[in-house]
Image (cartoon, rainbow, N blue to C red; front, side):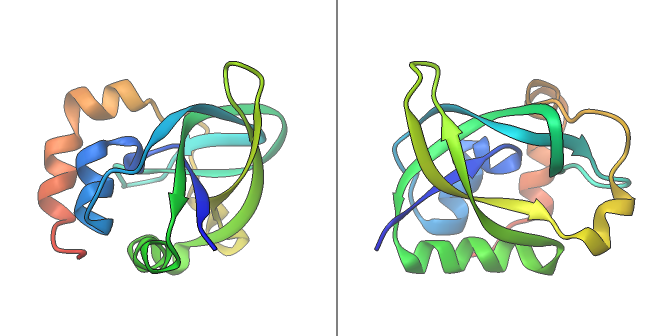
Length: 136
């Protein structure tokens, strides 16, 4: 059964998700309430953790096959937990999805600084793509 995926960091970049699963799934903007996106010490990518007062913007990718989710699980590694979440689109639609949430054992690495997708695209996407090649 296909899953939807909430991407809030590097996976929002079409070239990166395509490198991992071999295609860019259909998507639309979405937000995840109750989670905060933060920078991770020494990394170019973010993490999210539960935070009642927060909302995280991102994309919902629709209908990922189980094999594609397995590739994404391998890419994300043990640092993240793949958990079910509920998303809302700008039009108010709600969708179930999966999201990669920082495991509690690694939350001490989250900084008190937000992670910005536009800044990532402008300054770091090329470096990230170079350093994280070959996941397929």
